[in-house]
Amino acid sequence: MLPVILIALSCFIGVQPPDPRPAPAEIAGERPGDRYLVTLDPAVAEAPVSGRLILFFITDRDRRFRFRRPIDAPFFDRPQPVAARDVVDWRPGETIVIDREADAFPSDVDTFDGLIRVQAMLALAPPARRERDRTGNPGNLFSDVVSAEVSRTGTDEVTIHVTRRVDGPRPRRETDGVVWLDMESPLLSAWAGRPVAHRAGVALPPMFDAPEYAQVRWPVIFVIPGYGGREGEAMQYAQMLRTPGIQDFAPMAVWVVLDPESPLGHHGFVDSPNHGPRGTAFVTELVPALEARFRLVDRPEGRLLTGHSSGGWSSLWLQLEWPQVFGACWSSAPDPVDFSAFQTIDLYEEPNAFRRADGTPHPSFRELVSAEGATAVRMTVEQEIRTEWVIEPRGFSGEQWDAWSAMFSPRDPQTGAPRRPIDPQTGAIDHGLVRDAWSKFDIRRRVEREWDRLGPVMLDRVHLGCGGLDSYYLEGAVAKLRDAVERLRGERTGSGWITILPDETHNTIVAKMNRPFHGGMIEHLRRHGLLVEVRE
Image (cartoon, rainbow, N blue to C red; front, side):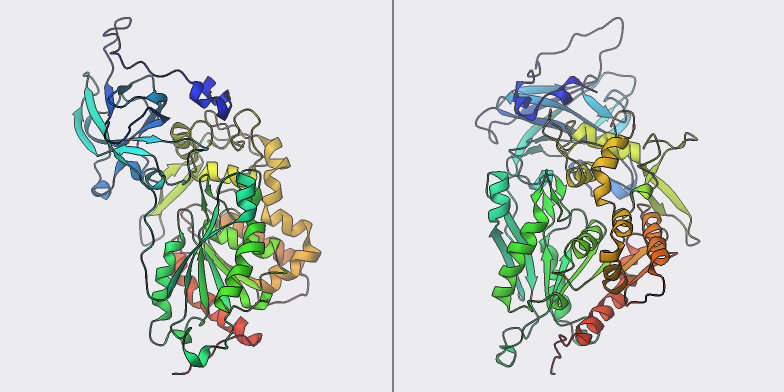
């Protein structure tokens, strides 16, 4: 691992600045390597800047990339090359060279052949970063897309000009039936030492302000988007609530779409050393504020949770962590709920996350390629983790594995970053870290360990669906959780359920779960006398 990874974050700016002068033409008879000359335009930077200079490439000629920008990487369906280096005090007008000495994956920048598309980004490092999304983080600098023909056997130079600056997330546009909430959190702000806000999109039923409903207290459904999703999805729920006849298929309620994003990725509403008291702040600050402002039912039976993918895990976690606050949850395709089936990896027993004992790679993403259910692996765990390492060697990338580390790991005392359970160069698993820290968030193990308390919650309030062909191999962990619940339930029955639909993927399971999820919410609210009957 490069020495810079061992440097404390506070010393990041002490990394030696790159030498902008041309490299020697020949080294021991080798041909000069390809060079990418990246110049900082004075129009976007009045003073020197520091951060991680990343080159995102698209070398694949598949038509799926026709309208994609390189900086929208990583692409799970077909990973593309990336190269990067740290820069310190990069002066306006100065040119930085990215060559074969840069950090890169899957190979250095000398290996490309033919037409490439490349885009440069200067990504700020924490604590300057405020958004995980590189193209949404204020202060990040980037270039337009540059197309070039390069040769594997020749010596090429590609010129790139960094001419654009991210000025911050665009304000949400006003939409009928949606209230955008941006409320500072005292708990999170005190923890972070800077203002941190709760953000949500509140979708209101069309009759919310009608005089005849002025005394109604509305049930609330908290929606947690999947990885990369934001509160802007509230517009979809506002549209749903205004669909004629929707009350027969979905409950008339206040639908609150939460923002689960942080500078380190999806925070999962867990209390962690890296995110602060996210769960506690949500429950003790945002929930009461919403209830007071929007006339919401202020008891557990009227507070429901739902989410998909990372949001599926988060909604299940909140239900189990705060059963005295939330009445029931409906979760689809959750991130791994059993760490002995973390996608296809047993984090407790296997020595390596990149390869199985027989030497075959652990897959991370697969795609359905035939109507008969055949799938093809598009990305491996090694490709995913090593790409994250190039983007941010210290562990602050905010991408999927680094985000899990931010949720489940303590901080590394040397770097200040979340400790990684997997060595990004070798794939070796840190079993001590998994056992001592990560296992506390292993939902299957927790349910088994606390069955007397959590068993009734699982049996009566949890509704969980996953596809048997989940694109991220999440069905294995769901099956283990289901089997544990069935083994422990004895003669006990309940309205909760866990189901795996054999032919569904990570995406198709959403449509399949709409009817049972929404119908279950209607039945739950009716059973507790909280269903708002809409008069035509």
